Image 1 (cartoon, rainbow, N blue to C red):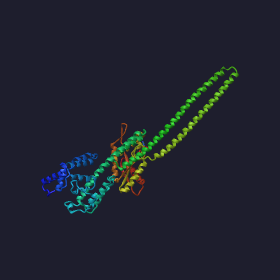
Image 2: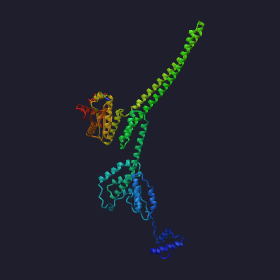
Image 3: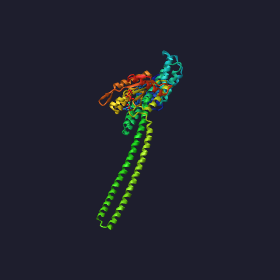
Image 4: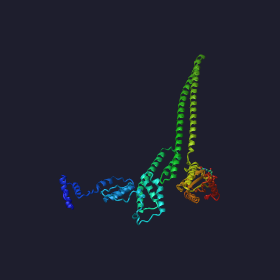
Length: 529
Ligand SMILES: Nc1nc2c(ncn2[C@@H]2O[C@H](COP(=O)(O)OP(=O)(O)OP(=O)(O)O)[C@@H](O)[C@H]2O)c(=O)[nH]1
């Protein structure tokens, strides 16, 4: 090569010469390579539009975050912007960018630099220039928001947890670098949006699955009204929004349904088997007895006719002999039938004893049931567990719990005038209205005959009185229908707070005393005790 080429024309001429000397075909690629070799420059790589569009096409669009990501990716490709693409990928993956940019130059520091480093870097004055400092208490609040939500939102995403922890650490530093914090928050929010979408999807799918299971159990349940009612309550309870209390209620109800189902199935199977056996044997014996009795009857009849025809003692002797033998055979046959029937009765007795034993076992199982069969709300046992649970929760969270004891007014008169069945339906009506009227965190249970207890977590006595009064208004607005007749049901209630230093029974006694005060004061009112 002679003196170095300096103008583009000279470089081009020199490049052609180089190709000829190397006997290379003058294709655009070969010419471009030779040109850069002569000029001493690096070849510029063209933006791989087609390949990137192909990648964009393959990107999934299942979640809103994925749709957003794809749109931004397409935008960056359309603008031929390596910078935007790099930023997007770094944000998405939450990892450091490549050391070298695709154009061969040094990579510019992207806006979304690695948060792990950001926390350790001191703030540079230029970076913070023009940015107002963040008040420490606001930073602490932000740190708490991120920290408290982390176990929930990052349960299945280790990277999000890391980013969250770094963010919390950074927020708790004495000084903050506004640009760094902005960047870390943007990264965290971006990653969080994926996690939240995912969790919402999982939650929806699980609820759908649960509903399907309940519907399936309902379809195969024996035709029992209580079971049917519980299954409907389960399907309703599986509707969003979910809460821990609702899930606990779901669990308790499902346990009841399982116990009751086992009970119903066992009893039906046993009873069916016993009936089948007894009936079959009875029919068999009946048929045998009828046939053999008919045969003996015919034989005795023949003997009687022979005796009538006999003219001498000698004629009678064989007939009497025959009659005696027939009578003996008849007695033996009858004894056999009697023996068999006795055996059958013994077996029936043993089966009956077995059924009794099973019933006792099932009664013990039924004691595990936590819901009232008539009204579907918690029974006394279920109430006890709810009270224990809420007391523990209140101790843990430092909150207050109140209870309200409700007693239906003049219920005896309602029973006497409309009948006991109408009384039952009235109790069910009250429970239904209460379930709709109460807040999701409140729990209602049947304490006894026409008495109910409502457990009101995180509630002051004044607020509890308000809740119970609202229920009274709802009950007046939704009259109980007995045939054509509309009946107003009212109740008196006593409200009190569960104190930490006393057993639950003491609080119930106080609520009971307050309820009696409400009765004495004219009924249909709430008193605080
Ligand atoms: N139908 C029906 N009646 C019930 C049930 N449990 C209790 N009772 C009846 O409820 C009535 C309660 O009567 P009382 O205790 O005299 O109270 P009351 O008539 O409501 O009068 P006050 O409480 O003073 O308003 C009794 O007659 C019980 O038999 C039930 O499950 N179904």
